[in-house]
Image 1 (tube, rainbow, N blue to C red):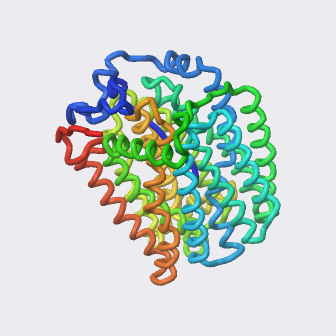
Image 2 (cartoon, rainbow, N blue to C red):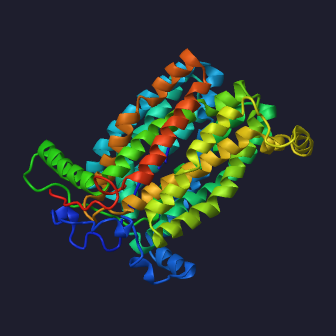
Image 3 (cartoon, rainbow, N blue to C red):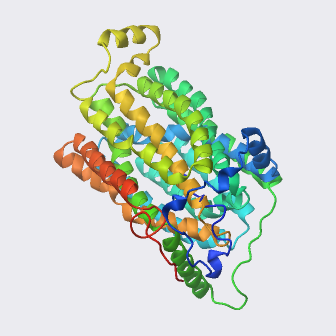
Length: 479
């Protein structure tokens, strides 16, 4: 879990009067807009070529996208982090505790990062983000001591203090009518992870986790080069900073209070949904690969095949979803995507008793052709691929929703507050998941995931993502 980590979105006709100026009365006339609806906005059918031309017309977008793709080429290695740490210290409580502590640090950094992003030159933040990532990859490549790995993770999550401004740097300049496509292109860069995953999967039976560390070292070098490219070619983006003569703490508190009011006025439903989804994800990511390795006897090369398959499937879907949100609205798209989440959790549970969805002979034949390929006939394969694909699609939906609703002012602060609230309330998830798995068995994690996913799906279907109350209820926003 990481990202992505991984923060943005808004409607073309919303906020003709800027919400940041307090003129946000009756932002949403009601659900006739699907609350992201875009039937009026999308009367003009813009072709994919015209959309790409508009998106790539800004030089900074091209530079930022290329360097982000270099980073994304190593993104899927993080999927194996818990399994790697398990090979060093086989305790889900320990792994969960590490996850919770680093999540809390990242949450705090993200909170202050919002203010930093709106007061510091965003080009500088975009460069520093890459430098911190390079440091993380370097330490992961050099050290196997769990305490130094923890330090590396701390550096990784501390980058949240720069990510808000770094993300806002590019978000503020994406054409809103093409924001779904523009943001999808960033995630599409994960196709480059196929190369790193293939190398990892091929060499793992020979070198074990040594190859995991060596790929991190290569990543550190390439990400460092990306930082240099950003420093040289990105244009400067100075921010206004605080009012002259005002106290730093007073300015910080007042501006964040104001941004918080705007955030809760615009997307209160999405905040609640993302909190529960984050808790669900923390349970799933904590135990999924360890469960497959220890309980289902699936080896690392087979897991690599899973993730490569995931990438091949998800990239065209990401681009399609980006276009759909620009044309048909986010809510209906979100509902269709999230419906897969509880199904994937259920399949992972069932996989314990029904390991194959096809005759086992198919798996044996595939395994004889390419080692690890037999996993495609495993029930757990369906669960992991469906979950991974839909997680990425869902994250794209969240980004597009925020992008289409945010005011043009205070972007970084509002983004940071959004993720601060989500991560703060879910930061104990990994540790709680570790305790649950130690007390009741690792499968109970996926039962919890299933229950949470069903609750979230029902909430998306019944309630609006962008206004208080049920669908169709008109609201008035006061600041």
